[in-house]
Image 1 (cartoon, one colour):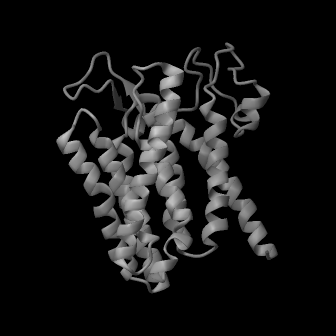
Image 2 (cartoon, rainbow, N blue to C red):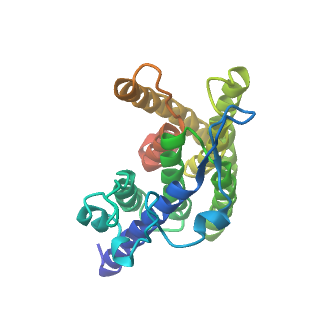
Image 3 (spheres, helix red, strand yellow):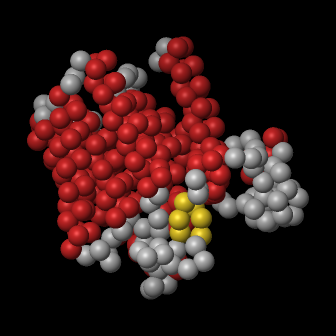
Length: 280
């Protein structure tokens, strides 16, 4: 590994550590609890971005502003022992988990895919997927306010990467991945709307496009990778469900968004060895 690559790895890890802290702000502020279920039976809505990013960080219990030295990712949470400096209210443990997870996933992506323009879409997917997964775990909501803008950015990044690498057929494979990945979930939602939220279908559009991009030039490879990813996501979802049932009881509701994200990222990281029979 060259000295330049080492510098890029360190800089990238620090950048994604900071992005993890930024994700925690969105996870904390974006969901808005409703006093009563809306017309869709949902208990949560989302705040406008102006409210999410407006003002300094404060303790949700006492309102004490968070000092800059208490905003250092991971370290501040450990020093404060997971409690507010002012009132002692517990700071949720997802803060250090999210802050650490983002740089770890960054390093895994670089290790698996190597340096190059092809990294752009999956690097964008990391903070987006982690944020959506955390919100879904906490509220059983996949926020549309994140998914569609993230999908638009993902399309732009894949177009840019395909253009810079001269691999325009990757975009066709991305579209196939989207159709094969999101199509069955849409049909499942249409047939059994009580069994799956439409937010998972929206999320599958974003994930399916990004997943298909990493299947290379052959549309059949994109379709195969999407089917494999659906199976992997279902298995992860079952595992998470068993854990949730054990921790929360038989009436626990289990979000599917985190399983979709984990399955997609896993298949992207393993795409090359999986698709070798296709000559990709």
